[in-house]
Image (tube, rainbow, N blue to C red; front, side, top):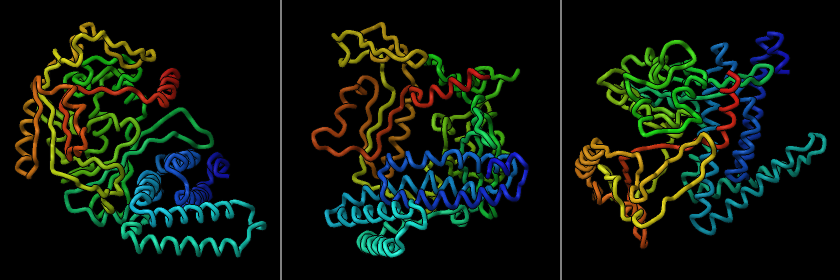
Length: 437
């Protein structure tokens, strides 16, 4: 019916149907989260992808339902997977808790199965009994683990706005397939912006994925100058489909910046290909980057503003690597060249010198200054710091971190060259999109 309403431009019926179907789907997924494993839950959520894409498309075109769309991001991206992960973590705390959580999962699984059959075939008494058992199990776990209540707490954008101070903002990035009556090959990126006093999220259209594909040069062979070109103000990447050049700033940040007057601190959560971008390093001018203008705080989900991630601190140790000399390493001496076949079009390293650790990777003088500066800062905060520089920064020392029952450091900072391999699951999808344009 939703597709029909969209085709016939019945906007009021379309909006009400989107809201109603969204609530039903969230209820189903919420119940499933109580008994499915992380991988099973992820697969189950994937079945609702087209529905979410349709909701985001509606917001993109109408400018309405931005609050509902944002709350869906908090629900699917923040709450659900966090719930499954933390529930499994809690189950490992002690044997009695393990039994209670397993009982809860079994009850929820039986309840979900009963609710999935036609209404006239359901047993009302059985449903009531299972719901009571679920409630009692949750109460028992809550009495034992106070944080269980936080796990079950669903956050909305109003909760976030209430915690923002003057000069702070929140940006939640999304990417979605453009879907009306039928799916398309167009993947769009957008941002939801919240500030102190916002009555609803401000929806900002950003770019179509092919614009970022062109800058990231997906599928091409990467060279060591790639990152320099990508984040260089004078040569910001390859020419796009349009006749003029655009930079990461033009594509990602420029549409947002006009809404950031008076903002200094920005909490943000990336999405899709934006996970591959270092926002801090995006240049604004010849002498300024985004990190110079804003305090950018990267979060898995902006839900963490209301319920911060719980991190157990074991020690105050830090190990820093920087100013690394790549031209010699005893690890590779007297060894034959390692040849790893790669799929066509992906990153590879052609190491012609068997005694050379880094091949074409050169010494980075800025990385030594970087770790020296960090060392002073965190030592002043009470950290015990070990710095590995020049030829002391070897592969052997890195592999020995955490060995012999020694705890891993609280901070491990590596200042070096960086690269990534494309996600093999997404590579074919991107290639298909680019081939059609």
